[in-house]
Length: 149
Image (tube, rainbow, N blue to C red; front, side, top):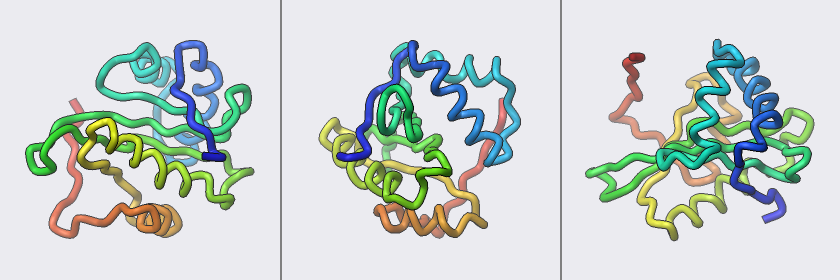
């Protein structure tokens, strides 16, 4: 994979904080640095509920992808959720996200994952095209709903 993936570790926190802050600003997610740090650190420290991969060179990542894991009776086992995927604007359009979303699910399937899900803004046509191109399909009968606790 030319868009090499590397599992992020605690020492990657500073690099990751800048990337996540950029994504949150772009996506209109209201979260301060302390909240962001508290959400990222357990993943970086190896909590079994998810992981973060840096995309590209370790010293200057091109982006990241955050995965979380759960269990689905419907899909017959462990499933995952692409919680966030972000590619720096300067390198978008080069097929990096496409490559990640085509190759990473293969590795996850080999590790036992039965399905991978994501959510996308209904108005974000370019992201929807990317996700359709990489094998994700809308589930017309279902709508993601949340109860923030």
